[in-house]
Amino acid sequence: MALIEKYKEIVDIAQQYGATITDSGNVLKIEGSVPSADLKNKLWDIYDRIDPNFKSGDLVLNVNVDTPVGSKVKVITKESNLNIRKGPGIDQPIVGKAAHGAIIDLIGKANDQWWLVRDTDGEEGYAYSQYLELV
Amino acid sequence: MKTLRFLSVFVLSMALVAGVFSSCKKVSDADLKTAVETVLATSGDYSAVVVDVKDKVATLSGVVSSEEVKTALDAALKSVKGLKSIESLIEIAPPAPDFTAIDAALQTGLAAALKDHQKVIASVKDGIVTLKGEIKKADLATLMQKISALSPVQILNDSLTVK
Image (cartoon, rainbow over all chains, first blue to last red; front, top):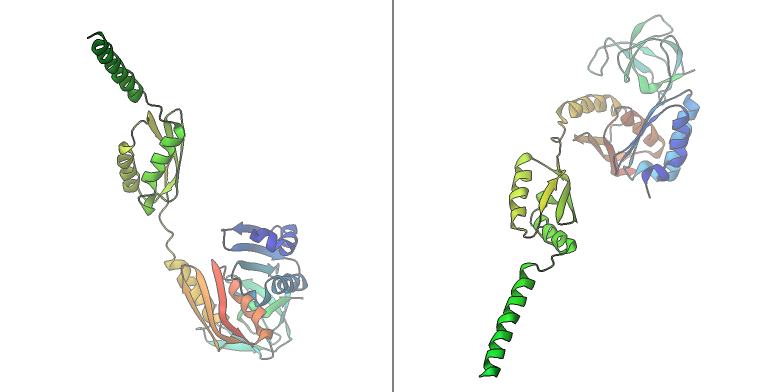
């Protein structure tokens, strides 16, 4: 079965938001963004249902939540506080911490992985974007 | 005597007929196609080349890895008798992409992605991320999302134990 058929449910939703779909033959790549974290999580739930534990290695689902600079974002670490660093990278010194569940300001983006944030104390620095969710 | 003369004329004419027949022996397009395919089968270099023969003209299409392979194939096909001409639509494949920079970027991204998943080990080659070790089911989607955001060529996690 063609991968685009196997993951049709995901493809259909992603395409509504203008995602790019590429099929290399053994890997389907879906890249784009969706307007909410709920929708992103829904896509991942479907993915886990179609391919339990994502074991087949035939899909790269690179769908992020459209989060413009200036948005409020929530810290969605599992339980710990989120490190805020001087620069974009885990080798950078930690300049502050944002509490788990806190809502902070997104004020810039170094790249897709590292976003510049201002926490509730007014401290500014870079945080790992995968632990930030648009509110 | 008459019989002998008749016989010799007969033999001579039979030989002539045979000669004429063998010189314009019908080589079908299908035969030629098989002959070219036999040549193509001699080397793995030609595995992505296909041939079509029509009116004794062979048309080759597909991809080979280099100009040298293409030249070698042209030379090898000279051994196929009966072809009027060979038309080559064969393309030279672009060189394999260099993954050095992509892999380096993935390594950097993985350091951050794996920071909170200490029991997971990742390796990177040619843009493909391979995951080993173990992870809790509750954390699996989070990890996969982090790695997918790095836009790798592929993520292989079938050796990752999900607890």
